[in-house]
Image 1: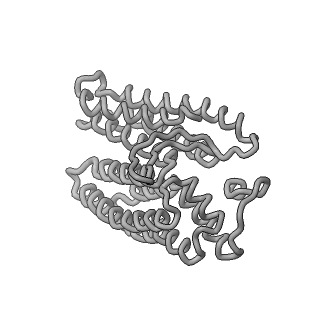
Image 2: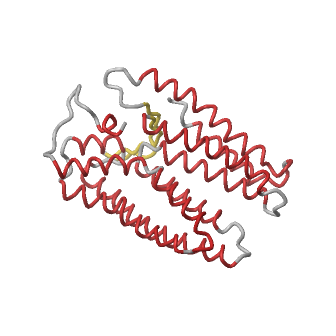
Image 3: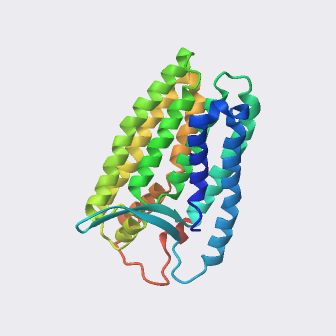
Amino acid sequence: MEQAWLMPALPAAAFAVLLLFGKYLPRRGDWLAIGAVAASFVIFFPVLFDLLDHVGDPGFAGGTKSWEWLSFDSFSLRLGFFTDQITIVMLAVVSFVSLMVQVYSVAYMRGDPRYGWYFTAMSLFVAAMMTLVLADNLLLLYAAWEGVGFCSFLLIGFWWEKRSAAEAAKKAFITTRIGDVGFLIGIILLWKEAGTFNIQEIFEFARNGGYSSAYLTTAVLFLVYVGYLLLRSVVEDRDRRARVAAVIGILGFLNVPVVHFSVLWWRSLHQPPTVIRPGDPTIDHLLL
């Protein structure tokens, strides 16, 4: 599980190489982009088997690998990658679907004058999606979320010569930026009470009754519904309806922490806060 960070790292490295040297590579580097995603898909299986070997261990809550990014006084910020049962399902979906899309795109995009740029943007898109799934920290998750949004803008407006594509890209970018404000406010609300950006520590804080029902409800509304209602308006652009709808689906589907917070919020409204003790069902068991 400690090697899970390689899954987003490989497409990110492919993006850097293609951005700098793509025009000098054979076939504009499409083989490099596909190879990076294929390698990520292969790495998924050792990560999966390692998780299955430890999932039955007492007290096992997931595997993590993190690095200290910032530290001053009593505040320390670590950024890293976390793998558990939900994460592994998302990784399977993202790695497999991304590989199939890129293989299909070889024929679909053949002959396009910006053929190489397409695979460059796709490599960054895949890296951002995998980081979004694996992030153990709300700040890293937010950065990956912004990366996915930026890549969506690039891909929706790929054929920017068409006015419909250019307008759809601008509308998607502006609307999602407004929705991201709600997401950021939700993150700040969660950090203000818990005093940490670490997702697992926030979950534990919520399980132990650290958030009141009203406070958690407010945070979830900002995290989910404000962003969703604003993103939904993007679909009104009929010329790119299917593509934008797919992007919105990916953004919503991969937002693993929101699923946890939504369940925690629902439980907080229907029963008093309780402390999870050894042997009690955890939120992950409820979801899976």
